[in-house]
Length: 107
Ligand code: SF4
Image (cartoon, rainbow, N blue to C red; front, side, top):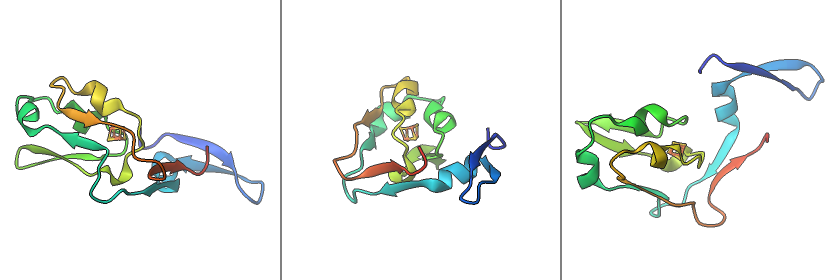
């Protein structure tokens, strides 16, 4: 849905279209360095060939490098989709500690 647009009221009162990329740019994160809220069990992950997590994450947090799934939680929107989509139950998911994680600045 990268071309999906909506409108929102700008500070000048004009309606301005926002793309999904525009909206993602407005989301803020506070990273809990060394304490990621999502971890991948590599043994379980190795059993999976589908990598639904890579395809379903709206923030593009998952990548495949040298055949292994990698995650960068920096842009995670805490939707939980990846933990539900993983058929191998390889994703350990919890909310970030208080004060860390995503902040939606525009609702
Ligand atoms: Fe992506 Fe949502 Fe999983 Fe975060 S919780 S990594 S945004 S699918």
